[in-house]
Amino acid sequence: MNAPSELNFEDMLRIRLEVLRREHRDLDEAIHALEATGRPDQLTLRRLKKQKLSLKDQIVKIEDQLIPDIIA
Image (cartoon, rainbow, N blue to C red; front, side):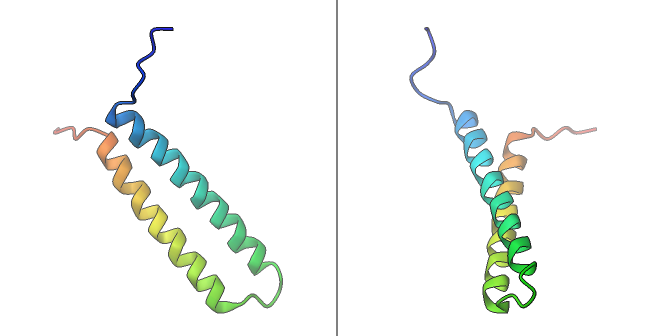
């Protein structure tokens, strides 16, 4: 019951990361479904893939913020 009422920055990043991963997974499923139709709309397919790549870049950026740099 003593949980803080506000999330810290790392918690917000983890939540954002999960949302982005879910969106990335959904786009992946949409791309596969579109490709399975036989003759997918190439423009739509290209836009979905570009959006998926953008999400992946955002995911990597957040993961880099969450994982501390370890100097060997």
